[in-house]
Length: 353
Image (tube, rainbow, N blue to C red; front, top):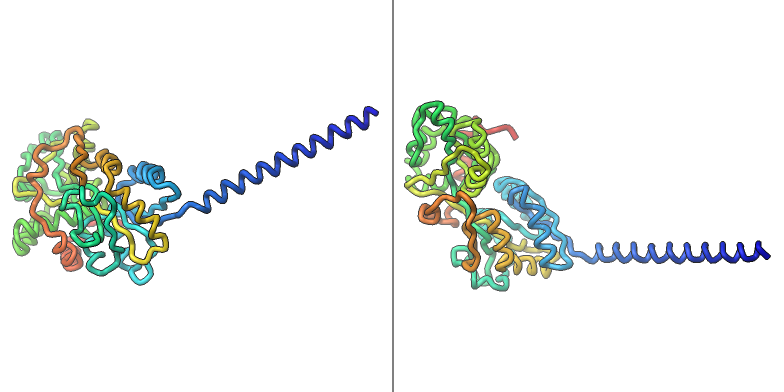
């Protein structure tokens, strides 16, 4: 009798365990089905590495059912890769890339026209101007000089106030700047010099500057980081990296040259031919939103949405007034020519890849 009771209990345990296994299997299948139901968007980007996770989290929370798969590199590399794939694009979107690169893509009909919801509220400068829009802007960044005051004092070198001051022999091998072929910050800086000075005088200036440059980096952040560490006296970088390094205690002055500075904006667009158009449009709607601009404001001071303000610590006063009058269309159309000439003249001092 006891055997019968024990056998019944065993059968019940086995049956219960089996049902639990089936239930767990069903849950697992449900999770798999949910994962499979998410739309995976391949997004080419040049945003900073430390921004990848926060942006992914914010987009996926705001746009349910979408999974962001970043392909990240510097502006020049992403631009070259996207153009090389023009016959068979691999990206669904491009987000966080320079406006001049995006203008070039638009000129070659590589972007899917779409005016996101709320785009009319963005500052006019941050819209392509096409109807429908080919891209929308996110935020803007501008060139800045990071000057290590401790190194300047140690070497008895003066504080520069304008671009011409950088030709001082006191800065020989003490200047670091980004390579414009790989860095968006580098290209906006070179384009601004050619615009502000005229091409002939601009190239002459860069010939002389080259004598003081120690290395051309492949990152727009690296020059200011090196200056902040005292590895070099001067880094030509961008505004927000400079403010960040100063806030972290680096002995640097942030200098916006009096003649004006180059600037660019980060932009977002949908790739023509994407197989996930509806999902990409929803992400583009998010890009134009106030919520997205609040996220952009964690990293940039100049934002596309006028209803959102950012006040980063140690950000240089009067930055907007120093922005040079640049033509993104001209920057896009002349990019290949300018980079070829720059590479021919100065690539010997570029950092190894």
